[in-house]
Image (tube, rainbow, N blue to C red):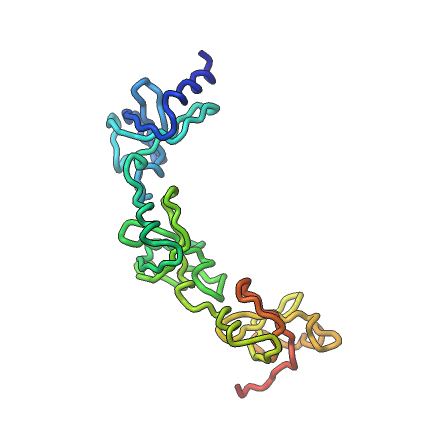
Length: 268
């Protein structure tokens, strides 16, 4: 029997989802080799050891020579490999979490880790989810997570998604607070005159910070001056700006402004 036919036979003998018993023959940081009863070896990856504790390594739970019950996750007949799972032999607690904490629900948790792209929050002392930096603040998308939370903080977050199969869920910090873009849209309409602060200048126009911290963009092409870019070239960041609301799209977080006369009145 050639190798391809051999693995085809193995895939029939070990269908996906079948529970089998094997002996641990080798431990590595990334997983361990498990020899099944007929001598076929499969890989039990570290991510398939435990449903909620993703820091565990094989040596934390198993020893060489241990007999373990595992589940066949898949058989790759082309590469000649069997993937096994230990956690899949027990109940998946993430399924219960998904039922208790549906999308849109609010929960409290403890910040366990901070990374450049967000922070990890643990709820019920076992389930760890992530708050991406884009879900930390409504108006400051470039803020570093450490400027918002610290390890050990207890915070309220909103559940965005629970993936029971992968054992992960995503959370939002900002959505537990009022949306300033929606608030601006509720209190302003097209044609309203507003005052803001020039926050930055680009090659297409001016970014103006308005009430609530939202940012509006006024294009040079919308300037009432014959040469908009030249006419307002003397403005600097921090200057007060008078403008007219041209459009508001709260869902896309976009406010278009038409620039009015530069405001130099310091008496607000």
